[in-house]
Length: 114
Length: 116
Picture 1 (cartoon, one colour):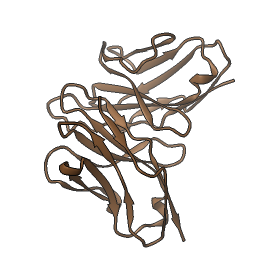
Picture 2 (cartoon, rainbow over the protein chains, first blue to last red):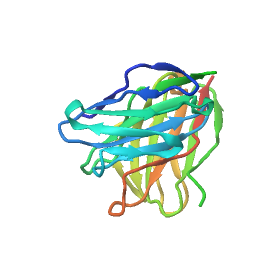
Picture 3 (cartoon, chains in turn yellow, orange):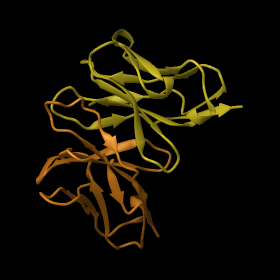
């Protein structure tokens, strides 16, 4: 079964600083990978996805993530944090086979300090 | 193009009552997924449906929970005889049919169920 590990349930950065949110997956076959953002009392919004094309994926709001097969990682980065980036971020994987359910990590709460 | 719609947004039920959660997928989407988010946790898959078919219900509790996606109308997640442990946010997601799929799922705003 797929599993996703997000290191750090809470991350704090200063406004303008680099954002790095970590995600590792467990799968012998590279899955599809996603990052979602959730603002309080709202649904999830897709930030970006990896489905087998370029390993460096650019998403919305200046976020990007790099797929590293050797490290089974898909870390999310943003060069300069903005106050509006404060939210919860979820990494998710989906099997490349017929199963299409998403398996989510436990989430990382990002706080941006002024 | 309207997004995924869920209603109600908030639902309060007493122990033993039934809860019905509705989900209308995005226009043109024929695949629906239900996820549950318990407090301080990530989302957990419950069930995957296509029109008139349950494709994968491996995440559904064996008792009291059921889901359907009829030919006409929204998908329904039904919880019978609710207990306090059912209190959670329930999210619906939809995706296009296989073939053109990028496998991304679009999420609704969720229904927050509180059992008193």
